[in-house]
Length: 69
Ligand SMILES: [Zn+2]
Image 1 (cartoon, helix red, strand yellow):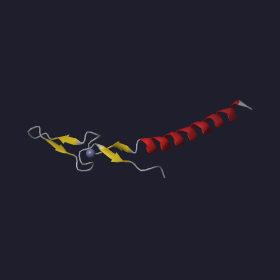
Image 2: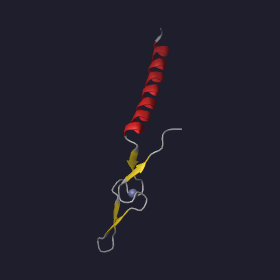
Image 3: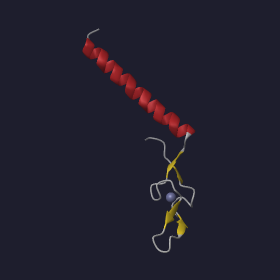
Image 4: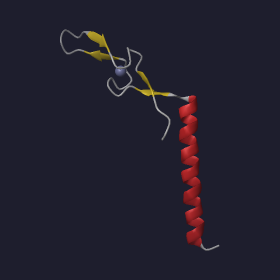
């Protein structure tokens, strides 16, 4: 086995591991941080320092993420 094919198989293995890892992380952690409030679930209003809930995630800061594909 020459070094180049060894490298290729290593890269292929890494790609498989990364794909599996992402699928597994989706299965175990189906939520991701809301991109509107960056996971805070609320916004701090500049006006009077008020706080209002994020409407996209209803204040949870979490959004259900879709599985790959
Ligand atoms: Zn949000």
